[in-house]
Amino acid sequence: MIFFNNYYFFGLLLFVILLSSYCFTRVFIKIMINYKYGIDLHKKNKNKIPEMGGIVPVIIASLILMPFNSILSLVLLLVGGIGVYDDLFKLTPFKKLILLGLIGGVIGYMLFGFDPFKIIIMAIGVSISSNFTNMLAGFNGLEIGLGIISAFFLGLILLLNGEYTGFKLVMIFIASYMGFFLLNKFPAKVFPGDVGTLPIGAFLATIAIKYNLILEYIIIMMPYIIDALLKFFSAGVTKREDHKPTKLGEDEKLYVPEGGYSSLSRVILKKYPMREYEIVMFIWGIGIFFGIIALLLRL
Image (tube, rainbow, N blue to C red; front, top):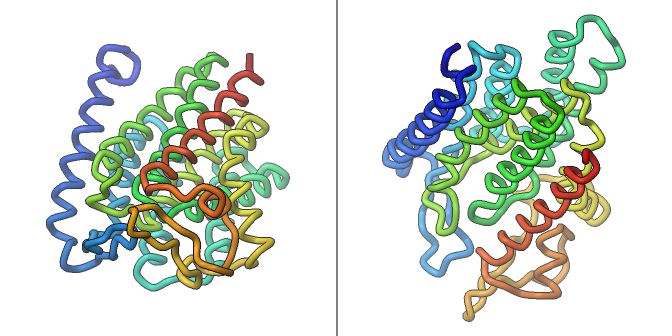
């Protein structure tokens, strides 16, 4: 526990976590490039990019968190397991919602005992939040970067509330994902897969409900909520694979094809076509904006 309670040792622990995540992700890339990969559609050369790299930060975070908070560790492992299955065999959106809800219900019982209201809140929160962080995706570094931003602001609110243990738990999560992010940002050398994106929402929802930060968390999650509502009202509940992706123009800007569904990124790109890293930073900026609002609400 010395690494957790002493700030100097805790800083060292975070650095080791980040470095481990980065190094193991590099190893993962070399192993998986010929086994499980996707095509980077927004590049002219259409590179093969290893998928499911998010398994690295999920495993590292869950292992490090285990002696400090076994329930959060279990959240990452269980939801990550759903992500692995979804990456390999493709779950329907409905089955994914139900399975994630069941995990959330179990976690709610472990945290609060037999409290039906809190169990239901946890089931809904984990299920919906996990799907949100999985849906707002498609560009290098978008989902992981926005997840880190969301976690950072949630962590700051915990710090301001004097919840130092909760803050440190979030920082461990961020460090695990930051090492991966360095290889997922533009131009990406690895994709996270659902194994990497689903646990982000599950972890953050669990933290928010555990520490009674539901309102602040909803504000932080507004980019995801806007994106999900746009998709739902334009296309209903469908798989991401069913939709036509944005197109790369000769000027290396992204353009939205005619018809199809709406989303946060598509609404922006329809009005202002831009390069991939630009749309990613634009959406990160939206995330920072709502994070600041949530922070000001606390102040």
